[in-house]
Image (cartoon, rainbow, N blue to C red; front, side, top):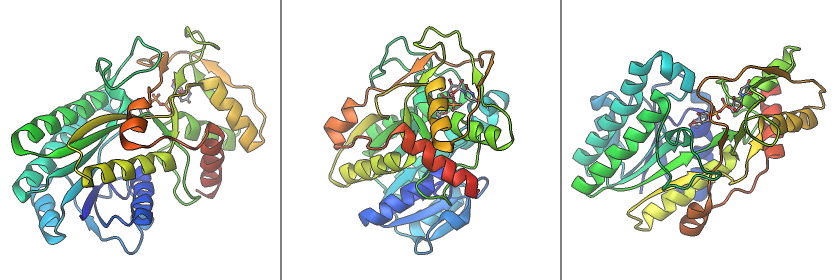
Length: 318
Ligand code: WQD
């Protein structure tokens, strides 16, 4: 099987490429390089520059490289930006997935691994969300990710695709110092940037109904996340027909606990700046990670300390 990895030049893509390489899974990258860095794509991996919204580019790469399976990572992923620019998100994420699926059906590609998000759940009223919890996304970003799952489900029924969707929780860390998350839009990179700029990290809301008043999330190391893709790819290659899986550790950390890890790993002391709530934040979003362990044999190995330490090493180099 040859895999097409869309968005393979991005932060998560770079890690998945290395994991696929180590697992011996042949892969080709399609990336429009709007945010990706071609230097993170290993030399042995063919890199085709093009957008998933461009039917000709997609058809060409599927045919030229005899692609038999697709891992669709290419997407825009900033929640706040998606509220400000919803139509861009509907185009890039929803139309991008539709266009790619259409080309896959035409080309006879039957295996599809989809990068989804915990943002599909919105504000759950349970301590640990399972894959069967209600999906009530609260942003255009989350909506477009959920619609992508629906398109896949429908195309699978009609055209016989086999598919898996992985719902990522809060991805953090770096597998190597040169593989930093450059987007600086999430808590850990924002905290590291604040510290290097001589400011205390901000805490968005300290009056939530949680153990210390700050929001709780399920942080997952990008290296573990990459391994989850290998497990899903192997399952599909082995004949799995479909599945939707949470990718998290099943363990919640509050913002203050993350900042404690930042203090420990950077060796820099600070008093966090407690500011107001950020609109749209659920108090708690933690995965039930049982299904992926039971069905794909994957579970996370790395800790919050590993995430922060590796993010810090990458941040300093970046
Ligand atoms: C984490 C917590 C903030 C910055 C988003 C998407 C989700 C997934 C991951 C891709 C929240 C708080 C943050 C800061 C803070 N993305 N915070 N100070 O919003 O949980 O998840 O990214 O699929 O789908 O929704 O991640 O890192 O922005 O925030 O206190 O400077 O940290 O309020 O509670 P989020 P985040």
